[in-house]
Length: 171
Image (cartoon, rainbow, N blue to C red; front, side, top):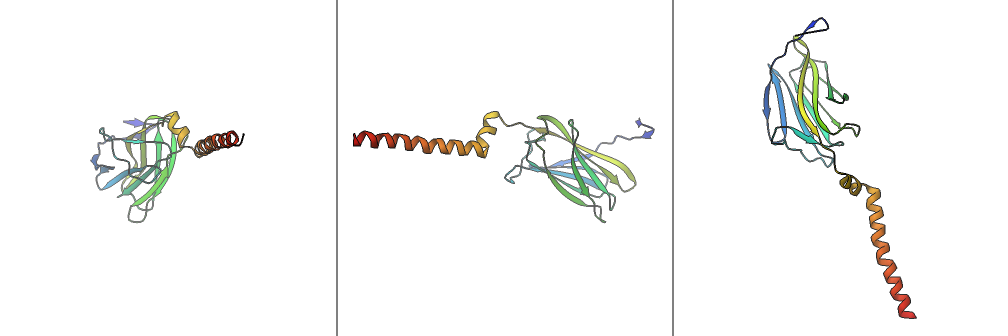
């Protein structure tokens, strides 16, 4: 395949999964992805071997076997959203994690890590993820302001009847 005067080669990668990680490998290089919820708990893979994540969850990318002292750009597509860069050390390894931004739209996306392997430039690894949107009720009841209003409502609900009982008892 040729794009903008550059020959591009599409090659399949080796895929290895555990209950909570996906590793994509080519020759001696690999990218491993793990996801964690807002409480730091590991997010397991779905039955389709995809991560179902929410905005605010954390994505960790571990890279091994890349060209020494290079950078790996990590982004989410179909909404082009740059997450950041994994800086690779002199051994060709690096690790970084990011919080998925609130601006990421719900739906199917591809998490992409692109960097240079020894002797191969612009290598791209991609992994399908699903960004799930919490229901309106879940968002409302999980907010701190809503919890405060509910707590105040409960307290007021106990105070008003108690005050009325005292007034009736003294009359």
